[in-house]
Image (cartoon, rainbow, N blue to C red; front, top):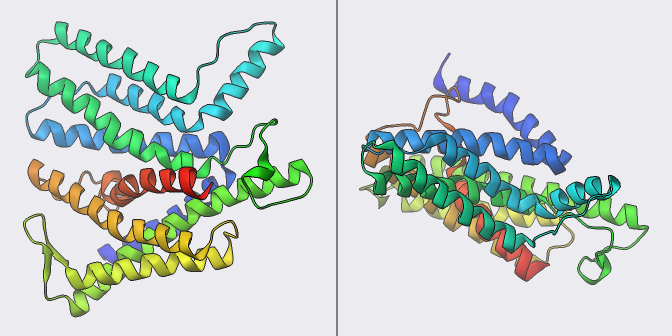
Length: 312
């Protein structure tokens, strides 16, 4: 089979599965992101080894998994506290920010202590790569959970923040559905951006975008990718995201169109530095997990902040 045929077959199987898990939300979507980000982090550590570093893969992946739980913290806290209180136990519950700080204050010294007894290569380089990889891959990727996780606790004053009315359960179901559709809109916008940039670059590309890092990318392709990313988000707003204004949709599309393409260039830089073409061969016809989700890792944190602090 040709490479294009393999890519299409993988997409036919993979895209419906991703959409199903996205709309399921909750711990199912968390598990999906946790698995994918762990695979991506494994690939990142392989790139680091190609440059002579010896990252602590298992502690780093474990750290990354806990970092991902930051974005499902409210749901996780309520589930754990509910279980403990039902069994007559009570424990102090940190805030999301405190939990995030606790993770760094525990894991970073732990990895330094491991390096103390490891005696393998450069301790400074090993710890730096281990911690940076967990932050760059798992934390950035995990913010996608934050986009999906429009979790509404029982005592949350929902009517002050969301333009939706009705019975409390119906309101929560509607908002949860918005979370899934928002993530699908992000996926669609990135896919449209990548496809438009690829085909426009092949057809009209004459001016190199960043030849040192990615020789085939052109300004013509980048402009087309930006335009279609915005169009995709505006269309998503019209079809499925009534909580967004037109301005919100344009801003979200612009974030995808600019920073999604920058994220792709950053991953190309890392691969070129490591001397490899793909981060792995895990996904037939597509390369590695990092190759497929590099744009998403740059876009998700910015969209998370924009929606959390501006839109909501």
